[in-house]
Image (cartoon, rainbow, N blue to C red; front, side, top):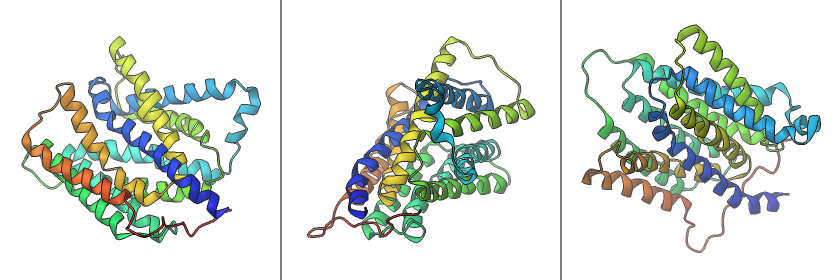
Length: 305
């Protein structure tokens, strides 16, 4: 059993990279939905992901939804990890400078690296910690370039919310390992719950804006990609992959996000970008490399059931 898990960890980690790439497209797609309130956008995008899941699972009739028959703890964990995370993130962006809130939020990959050892039982290597720290440093450079200096009191509530985001997502990613036997198709149902909760928040706090045709295209792509397939991929990766490596590799997301914005003309490719790019790439290479003469480490957990 243990050997099988170890053999599957590499491919599962690679699946996690799909999620990281899709999330790097989030900023670009969000710019195409400018003007749509956050919770309305969350409701629509997760609604698309939920609808796609219904279509795929529904091909097998009622039996296709047997994977959704799970204990309440599975549903609660996914709901907190996905919806509560986004709700806190929207609040943080509203009351704190976006660059600062984003940087604090991006503590989650570093926390994931650390928690993978203390909570998930993985052997933590120095190279993984170093890789995550280099990634955090590179992300700090990127966020600093986006920052705008404004006067006023320190938005402590926003900072705390952003740190809460980091804790929730890192904690969810680690705790999700306990449900390694639960099929990733459960994410479709959790997307439906998140869409419903988002609708409640939208009706309570926002004014509805009717998307135009171009925005609908962006919303559908969001629902199928960063708000859909990405969470299915991350669910599989965190259940079966190397958590510490996933954490270090996650710092590629802000770099790829910035590069995508530059390619489409929404960002400036200054020489200063070379610094964070080198830091993040070096961190990813270091974190995923094997020490000379050593075999890959195995996980100490064989089952949580």
